[in-house]
Amino acid sequence: MTQDNTTAGLGTVFARLWAASTLSALGSGLATVAAPLFVASRTDDPLVVAAASAVAWLPWLLFALPGGVLVDRMDRRRLMIIIDLVRVVALAVLATAIMSGRAGVVLLYVVLFVVNTGEIVFRSASQAMLPTVVPRHRLERANGWLGGGTTLMNGMLAGPLGGFLFALSAGSPFLVNAVTYALSAVLVALIGGDFRAAATDSRVRSTRSMRAEIVEGLRWLAHQRLLRTMAVLIGLLNVTLTAALAVLVLLAAERLRLGSVGYGLLFTCMAVGGVLGALLGDRLIAWISPTWTIRVGLLIEAGLHLALAASRSTIVVGIALFAFGMHSALWNIVANSLRQRLTPPTLQGRVASTTLFVAAGGNCVGALLGGLLAARFGITAPYWVGLVVAIGVSLATWRVFDRATVARAYADPPLVEQRPTPVP
Image (cartoon, rainbow, N blue to C red; front, side, top):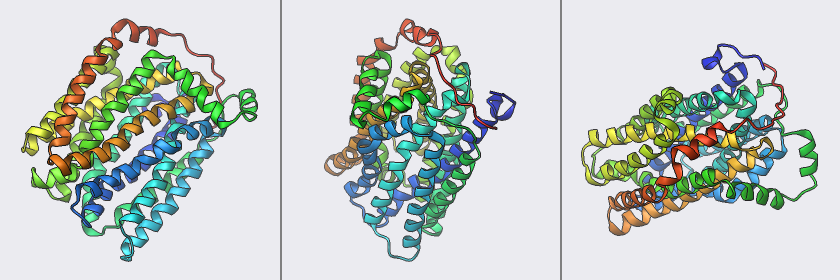
C-alpha cells in the first residue's frame, strides 16, 4: 500500500475513511444533543427522558452479534454505504415530521432505534477495515486520529451547535444529521478495493449458520483474558456512565442552572479533553505505558462521578468532564489497538461487535437505571452509585493490567493477514 503525508502520514485511503467517520460524527453528535432536548420539551419525567438513551442503545443488544457476522461475511466498505443511506431516509422522515408539527416521542424512539441499529454494523465494519488500511505499528496513531475526529465533531462542535439549532428549530439538528450521513456515504464510496475477509474463509463460512459464527467469536474472546477483562470492565462502567449522562440534561437545569446551549457546552468540555487525548494519544501511551493509561483512567472515572454528585459549580463539572474526555480517548486507543493487534483478520468483525455488545449492554441498562434512581432518590443518586461502582471495579481489576501482561500483548508478532489492495 502506498503511504503519503495525508492525515498524519497514514495514507489517502485512511484519509477518506477518517473524513467519512468524522463528518458523520458531527451529525450523530447533533442528534445526541437534540434527542433528550426534544423529549424534555415534551415532559419533565426523568424516566421518560432517560428512555430516549435506552431506546438508542437497545439495538446494540439485539443486533450487535449478528452484525459482526455480516461484517465478516460481506464487503465492509459496501456495507457502510448501505447503512449510511438507510439512516439518511430515517432521519429525513423524523426531521420533516418535527418541522411539520406531527412528531412525537414515539417517532423519535423509532428513528433512534433504526439509526443505532445501523451504527452497530457501521462501527464494526470500520474497525474491521482499519488493520487492512494502515500498518500494524501505526494502529495507535490511526485510532487516535479516528477518535479525535469523532470527538471533535461529536462533542466540541455538535454540543453547542446542536443546542443552538434546536433553539432555532427542533427538527434542524436531525436534518443536518441526515445530510452528514449522505456525505459520509459518498466519501466511503470513493474508497476503492475489496474489503472482504479472506475469500477462502468466506466460502467456508457461507455454509455455516449465523449462530455458529457468533459462538466462534464469543468463544475466541472468552479465551483472551486481557481483551475479555477489558470488555467486561467497559460494560460495567458503562452502566453507571450512561446512567449519569442520561439525566445530565436535568442535572444541568436543576443544579447548574444551564439552558440548552450551556448543556451542550458540557459536552464540549468533554470533547476538548477527548481531542487533546486523541492527538497526543500515541505519544502519551508510549510515555506512561498502556498499563498506567488504563489504571489512571479508572481513577478519573471515579472522580467524574464524585464531581457530578457533589458540586454545583459549572467550572468544577466542566473540568471533570474535560479530564474524563481525555481518559476516554486514551482508553479507546489502547483498547481498540490491542483488539486489532490480537484478533485474527477473519474474526475482526465478530470480536469488535462482541465487545460493542458487552459495552452496549451496560449503556442500555444504565440509561434506564439513571432515570429510575433519579426519580426515586433524587437527581444526584446516579452519580453516587457511579462513584461506588467505579471504585469497586478499579480495585477488582487493578492487577489484571500489569505491565508484563500488557507488554506481552504489544510484543506479540503480527498476525498473518491477507490484505485487500485498496485503490487510492
